[in-house]
Amino acid sequence: MENLQIRRAAEEQAEEILRLYQSLVGSPGCSWTENYPAIEDVMEDIQTKSLYVVLSTGGKLIAAAAAGGNIDGLKHLTFWSKEIKTPCDLARIGVLRAQQGRGIAGTLLRYVERDAAARGFDGMRLLVSPQNSRALALYHAAGYQKRGEACLYERNWFCCEKAL
Image (cartoon, rainbow, N blue to C red):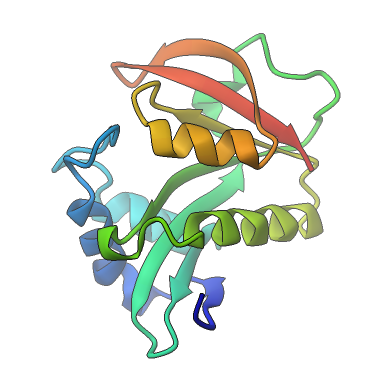
């Protein structure tokens, strides 16, 4: 794999990140739509320092992921591990189609986990579409455990977490 650079996203990258997300709509298992994620989601992630990008050697944006404080919509779920006191929520992880299958998502996930731990989080939580076999395989290989299922945002999800 080429030498990749991973860092927090900057405001000037917002439109490019949104284009990346929109390019993945319709991919097998992808739960995103033409209306989600929106530029407001991208900007909020950038402003809260929760959005990470992967850049190729030439500086081209090839992947992004958001990881921030506990989302209110997940707190009410009762099946989460009691040992994780300060969870970080992972959302909107995506890799350009032409770059998929090269381990980029796994590299990004490991980076985000290390950074979340350094920021004081002791676990990572996420929602994943039951139909997204590639994401399910990624999270399983990374040590995430399915804690339950939920219907949120008008969709069914597997709810997974990992202690950091």
